[in-house]
Amino acid sequence: MQADDQPSPGYVYEPVNVDLRFHPASLELRNGEQYTVRGLFGQGGFSVVYRVRDQNGHQYAAKVLAQRANRYSSRHELEAYQRIAQNPHTNLLSLHLAGELLNPPLGYTDEVIITDACGPSIKDIMMRARGEISDARLPSFSIDAIKSIGRQIGEGLLHLEQLNIYHLDIKAANVAFMNTVKHEVEANLPQPIITMSDLRIKIIDYGNALSHWIPGIARRHKVVQPQNLRAPEIFMGIPHNEKSDVWSMGCLMGEMYLGRVLFIARLGVTQVERQQSQFELMVSRMNAAIPEDMLEVSRQEGCNLEFNFLNYHERNNQDLLMNLMREQSDLPLFQFLQFVLIFNPAERPSFEEILTHEFLTNF
Image 1 (cartoon, rainbow, N blue to C red):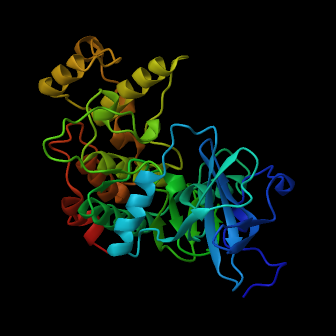
Image 2: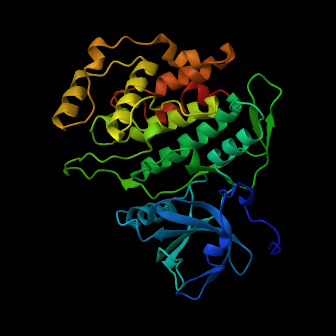
Image 3: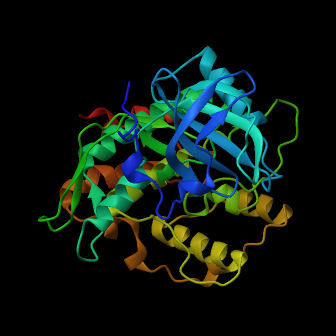
């Protein structure tokens, strides 16, 4: 049991400018349980996630849903946790309990989801590492760390797939280290490298998870995934599928190498313009040829993207993925990214195929 003056896991990575006076000192549930609030893991438009401790000193994460998030439904998230509980996996977050609060924070519902507590996310570590560098260089993870973390992500997502669940929100903030880890930044190298005391991770936050399609039910397009890690089919108005999370996993591994996202909009004021800009960079970076059948489906679905650039646009060789490689010794990672980041989901590898790739098996 921790003393009251000791930080709980993730404390040093708490979001900046957090004023705990606007948050409750404890969460009281209708079942009589009470959890002391130790701080925040994070806060977003749909929820706030508190770092809490029960009366026995055990640490948890408590997710409270915002009232303004009227589009948000916890049904899919709880369904994912229930399936995981029936068939757990070391790289997937587990549910402790779901209940109702007697004292919901102002602006939030009484619904609370309490899970195991993890340490900082990949995003937390990368942001902290950037702050520790006095220049403009972006710290990144070593190839061995990317390999280890990537394999765990792949194993966790394969397990979700076997449970008939799409995660659909794979990003640096949703992959957390299992414990309160320590990190160092080797800043004296040409490329600052982050080293970790423990590389074990869990995939967290199933708030955007959906069940697999039921045979016979028409598939419908839905905008899913963070834009910077969004699969091409989603941009094109084509329904997500078992390969959509594969794309996000590849993007995240590239981000861990670069210290920044692999694909980002360069131009545009409106959302549609930014999507167009990013999609064109994705095509250029991967030197992709988009199958005509995908283009036809996209046009039929009334996609907002404009595809004329495929006919007249000159590929910028400077944008190519391989030009982001720093050392020739990093080639295995880039060969893996070329294997994963395939535009056509029908040709994109499955998680089973990914886990047999040489990059993730050659330790």
